[in-house]
Length: 82
Image 1 (spheres, one colour):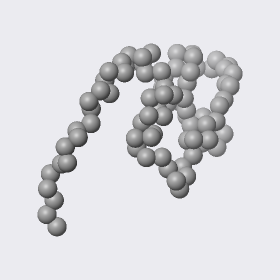
Image 2: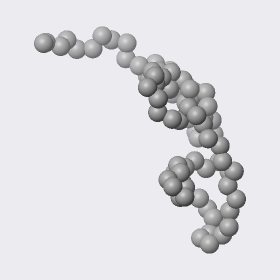
Image 3: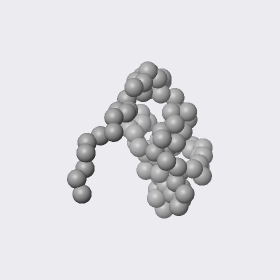
């Protein structure tokens, strides 16, 4: 089972509901991804989306790769008067 969360002091906040009864002892193996830190030279939105698509198992989540086909509008947009 893969569960994501965030550490806040001595507490780990879990992002989703897990099916473990209250009071049960659990063991947690952690990973820490350096790429989640905010840095001054952040990746572009496109780079971040591509990284997300490569790292996450979208098909397991029921998201087929075709959903991303032709989702960007290539028009120049509306005219802006300054």
